[in-house]
Length: 49
Picture 1: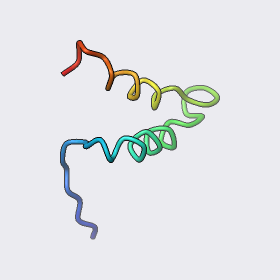
Picture 2 (picture 1 turned 90 degrees about the horizontal axis):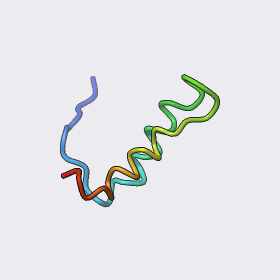
Picture 3 (picture 1 turned 90 degrees about the vertical axis):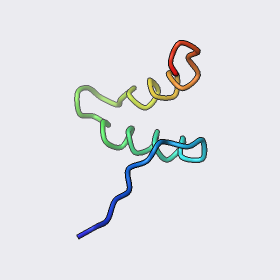
């Protein structure tokens, strides 16, 4: 059994998180994916805290 720790994302995690999301959704709903880009854009949105 694996042990997992759930924690808030840190800046150093950004690339790994985007890669994980891209790999998770690649070719699932359509060719390619854009979910990882949505995460990237939302991080810089001043309306999201």
